[in-house]
Length: 314
Image 1 (cartoon, rainbow, N blue to C red):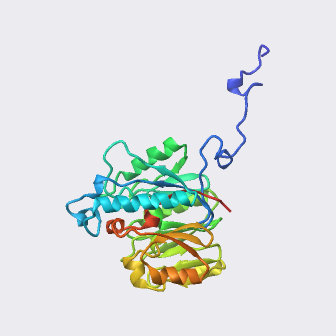
Image 2 (cartoon, rainbow, N blue to C red):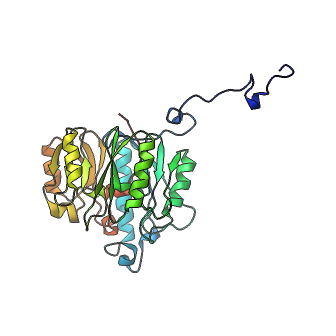
Image 3 (cartoon, one colour):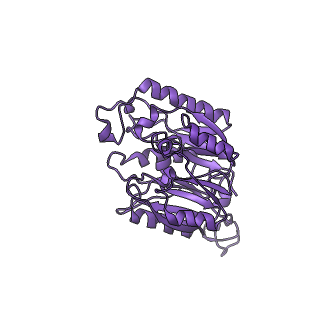
């Protein structure tokens, strides 16, 4: 360096400018992650294997439907893990350092994945308050960028958002995601260049995930009477064929729509829903099933339990 020249620390000759975008650094500085579709090949999920936290004295106080037999529930969960592994899906387990809260296994509520990283959830119930801290720490340890969170009175659960296509996201408000939270998410996604379609959920619906699911890039299935009209309209305007759940008892009691799309025309769904399974198979969808009667007593299904970390993106 010649006398009078700027030192590299101040922009001199030795300065090296960072030119890649944050998204381009995913897979380099940051770990592989990201989705912009609900039906691209599933590559990795974040799960929490439940333990003694499921043994609660008053299920209603913890938003559960009934007492859970822990041994049966854990056996069902091991089957879920085995099935994901058989489908070549990489599994990350949260494994918290302290005793976890009772609903922690419902990973889908705790973050929403984008092509640039995860947006951390903020659960609506006091029963689940703080679960997001556990997931935030795990994501950081995995090398996943956490690019957003919620402030003020905003609440958001990841199961209330879904990718319509690679440029557009559904964001629902209702019991679990309030208007403030939905608007905060909308602004964050729009800042990344995505379009957001806001929809509202009726009383009695928990999440958008439970009433609208994608089978491939041309076909979705919805719960008639619970799926927002605007969502169905947007699906059709985007070229989707909209199917209606063939058995509402299976949708309600069997959580038949609470499935995970493994890739186009292949899903992982709760077993014990023969009408829905047969209907989907007639539509050309391969249905892999896992029986979860004990786990479902906690008021969630396979979709709820699966935090999506990465899919093959469009």
